[in-house]
Amino acid sequence: MEQLLHYVWKHKLFPLGEMKTTKGLHVEVIDTGLHNSNAGPDFFNAKLKIDGTLWVGNVEIHSASSDWLRHGHQSDVAYDSVILHVVGCLDSETTRTNGETIPQMLLSCPDHVRRHYRELSQAEISPACYSIISSLPKLTVNSWLTALQTERFEQKTNAIRHRVEQCGRNWEDAFFITLARYAGVGINGDAFETWAMKIPYRAVDKMRDDRFRIESLFMGMAGFLAGEVKDEMMQRMQKEFHYQSQLYQLPAPMEPSRWKFLRLRPDNFPYIRISQLAGLYHTSTALFSKLMAAECIEEIRELLQTDVSDYWKAHFCFAKPSPVKEKKWGRMLQDILIINAVVPFLYAYGLHRGEEILCARAQRFLEELKAENNFVTRLWDQAGIPVKHAADSQALLQLHRAYCEPRKCLFCRFGYEYLRKAGR
Image 1 (cartoon, rainbow, N blue to C red):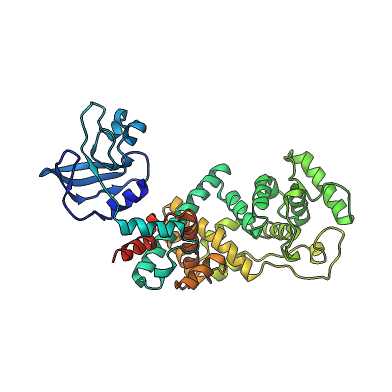
Image 2: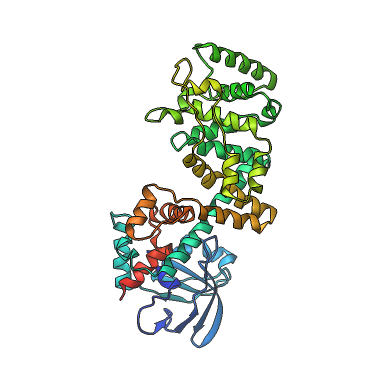
């Protein structure tokens, strides 16, 4: 109920007729104020005329006026600036910390808004606003997608900043962990992230010229060298990893049970991905810096070229030979890594350095990449929103996860259009 009152206030969906306080004073809303999603009053800097006097201050909204007392606002100086308490049910007085009474006003939600909001919140189809999508003006759709792209960038930037702090403010290490996560192709993403966070990167720096040593470390930390020796290569790696464990005081390896193989194509087996990551680390120095300096997609693809070592060209797991095959990162996987690792880091790094050109380049790269093809993008395409490139698909993923799944239709521009059209 309270969220709906927020919505009615924000968009001035007031019932017809004169609005008055509970004491009978006339209320004219000039400006509803700026919605506050953080602690404090719900709307800042509202402009109201109460009984002919202009007031500028904050507005608080509750389902019932007794919520003011229940939340302790009567003893919180942050709420002394409230000039009007808007409620759906009147059951108590409202006061400031000095005991002064605050004007209150009953606000009802129009029946058509309440009815259609119920339709949105209870709809079993996805998206819930499916019926009006095809009729939306292109300007409305494009402006909302642009805002969602920015929102997604901001969300990913916050996650990247947190990871960089976890890595002792080392951007190279934080990037490798993110790259490893998305190399896990969904089902092993969490396992790859956990694995990558265990890797002692300064130790790896000392062995960059020896791929076998890097691969032994990577396989060992994944837990793949534990247990019975299966063939000569595993024995050699096990011996090398034991030496490294003593030399660098390595943490305990992962449990092999953390890795998933069921229904995975052999090319996506963790052994193969780890060998490819070892190859990338072996051949590329200052990979992060080079990716941040790349000015075109093809340059990034070139930097992300990697293959497995000779042993893994003829194996998918230890002691089980297979026909010899090159196992490089294909274009599809490269796109996944560019969209989910390179581009977000480029944007976050641009903000970190205060270089807007990097942020603009990140946006351009998304617009140059093919749109992702998944359940969410197909839903919106069927609803009537064409998904032209990766910037669109990223925006629609943000829309689905941040608004559709938690049913935050009141905060969505498409939801607003649904309720607005519903009233006609």
